[in-house]
Image 1 (spheres, rainbow, N blue to C red):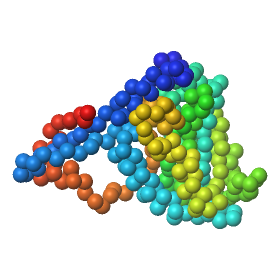
Image 2 (cartoon, one colour):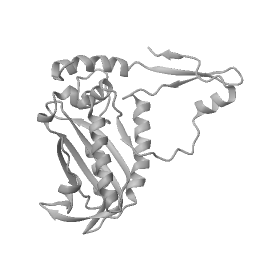
Image 3 (spheres, rainbow, N blue to C red):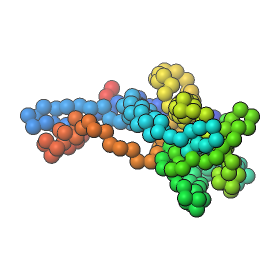
Image 4 (cartoon, helix red, strand yellow):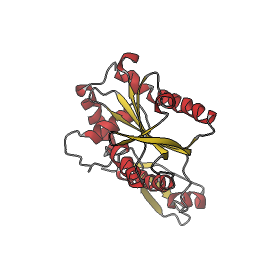
Length: 254
């Protein structure tokens, strides 16, 4: 595949939807010999979306503890747009989008550390343009706040050009006005295409396109810094520990 376009994506989207809506169950056996079936987690299915929602609650709690005032902010919204002249085609850009984004983040860390600062937490999601080139949404929580100023109704960073410059495209860096702005940005821009109502019969929508591209190029739905583990223990894990037999097989639902 040399290039992504509507016809090619529709073909892959059909395959993805078939895989997505095919239910797979994990089969466990407890000490008493009883069989327990649990729905497997697959990209885009109900269990996968519940998992993302749980993560988002933890992320909201982390981002809620911040330093945001009139002149400073330790939360940064960054959008990375790929320069078409620097890449062979949109397929190449998607294939290596993670590497280029991670390279941007590593360079940013080096610049911040020189000033005694660092990235405390990050959230990364991918989206596509009309020409199917990727662009990346980042939410960064820094250890120390950066100076900001208002420009055309948006809070910008004083050191934007030097700090957030990227050689392979364009960056837009914005500071939130308050905590509500942080949470609304998280839902509106970072995960807006993941929670559209699922319907097996309807035509391909933005959710199908986004998830198909991520599935096709094996990209995480969302990427982030390490989160604390949930206190609750999964029932399936408890069963595995009790019997030592683990997952016996999978059953495909019809």
